[in-house]
Amino acid sequence: MTETFDIGFLLFPELTQLDMTGPAQVLARMPGAKLHFVWKNLDPIKDDCGLTFLPTTTFADCPQLDMICVPGGYGTSAVMRDDAALSWLRKQAEGAQFITSVCTGSLILAAAGLMTGYKAACHWAWRDLLPQFGVIPVADRVVEDRNRISGGGVTAGIDFAFHIAEKLHGRDVAEMLQLVLEYDPAPLSGGTPETARKPILDMTRAAMTARGFDLRRDEIAAIASAR
Amino acid sequence: MTETFDIGFLLFPELTQLDMTGPAQVLARMPGAKLHFVWKNLDPIKDDCGLTFLPTTTFADCPQLDMICVPGGYGTSAVMRDDAALSWLRKQAEGAQFITSVCTGSLILAAAGLMTGYKAACHWAWRDLLPQFGVIPVADRVVEDRNRISGGGVTAGIDFAFHIAEKLHGRDVAEMLQLVLEYDPAPLSGGTPETARKPILDMTRAAMTARGFDLRRDEIAAIASAR
Image 1 (cartoon, rainbow over the protein chains, first blue to last red):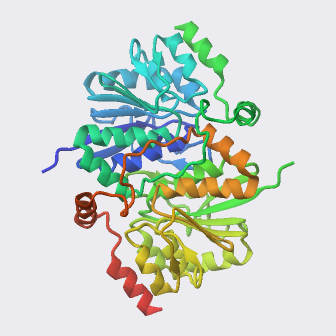
Image 2 (cartoon, chains in turn orange, cyan):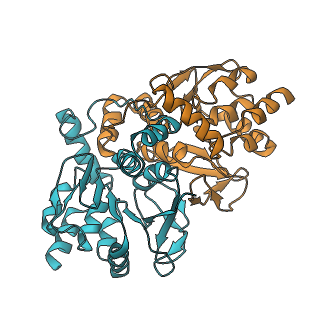
Image 3 (cartoon, rainbow over the protein chains, first blue to last red):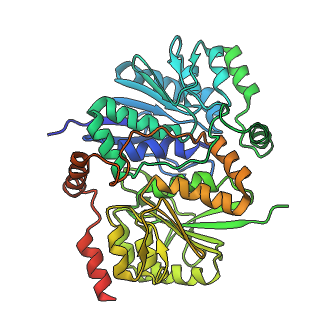
């Protein structure tokens, strides 16, 4: 019999859903995996692109998790100021085997004090804010430091999840899951600030601010200095 | 002012959520895009990995869409026999600019008679069933034939969506969205049956059947012969 491996995603308003749904699709197919989607209550949660999710459990009712995963998104700064969410993360972290994040979720772990002195990944546009919380930013797609494992921006969550699958179940199982999910991506060039054409990078920064893609840097800095 | 581009995803029980959530995350950030998640009623929909979604509208209330997108998953064969879903797809197809699918969603379009004589992509494990519906299978990640655009298995939906973004808004916007979503994937090798190691391919086929990942081939063949 396969032992159950309880994975809990923190679900919150205005999350970037692919930070969570990408890893969820991969991790759900690991032997024994059981997924939980957790928020303070069971009310529907709206993401940043028109989808609405129902939490499966609450902070009060969630069992001890083997792995916590915190996604990011517009809603990041609100969660960084949410004592109930941060307390729940701290409490779960005491018993969890892995404490993980995708995208700006590492800023939430940082605000909970769970990344202090650790290396972490983050979405490229907010990665430089990590040191204000005592976290060491790394510009990799997946970053592992002791039992903290973090993915970079949005789509990096899929690579992060295959990394977890390989770590827990070995290379063959990870390759098997890649085949099941037909993971043979065909990106255009320029998916990172280092590889993007300069005009595209400039246009992207401008659009992220103008069109409200932006998680406000000043809010995060204020949270850091209030600590 | 940007004109609205209405994109409707067919939401159904036991869909493979990443078939939908991957493209949704990309397409939601196209200028003017408005996303709809459509089912016969507004009851919560459970996917294949523990997530529950709320539809945003119903077959009866959904406005005319500019683009229909049908995901796949375990629930595919049930939708292929669902007259209300197939009728709605046919009705929307009359006015839609693009009729699209991800993964085994092309089998649903095929069952609706909307892919007859067209080339289409599909998840590799079910692609060979398309000819029973008069559809020409193509082993590409994204397949375009007139106004039918289809993605291959699961993660191919992300490449499919960037293809749509490039087609509608040009290369610069597509690259911009890749940068926003940090799309610079780092797969292991072997994400397709052609590139997978033979023992992994054999193990995957066995696991897909044994562990209930399987969308039953015999059911789909029966639907084809009943037409």
